[in-house]
Image (tube, rainbow, N blue to C red; front, side, top):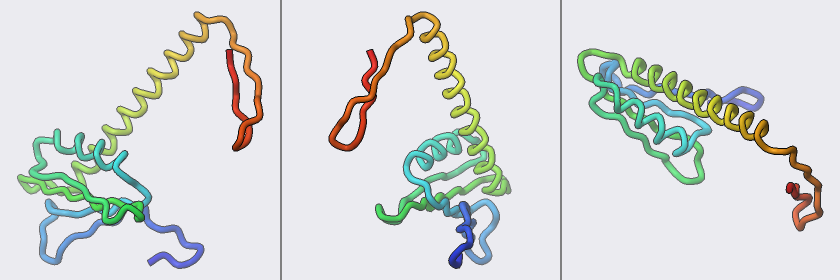
Length: 128
């Protein structure tokens, strides 16, 4: 357990006594369905994976219990590592595509002027 001032681990590996390395639950802290479902999808595409699923223990907790079971003696950490790398690549591709589209759009359109207007909760930006 992390004491005051200590950083809580982002990832924990939970393995039953006597269980092989191909059947592991990973606890991902400070995460939700956004990461859970995307990562589960990518890991299930791996041919060495028999099962991959996740649960969120309670809506007020921001952690995921992520279970991976593999076949053929493959350690569960390998599909997790590969899935995280693939998800990072997908996110980078989306970001790059978005930035290129913004550049193209800004080159094709005249500059937009914006002004701040008061609103109930602060200021809003009006562009037109």
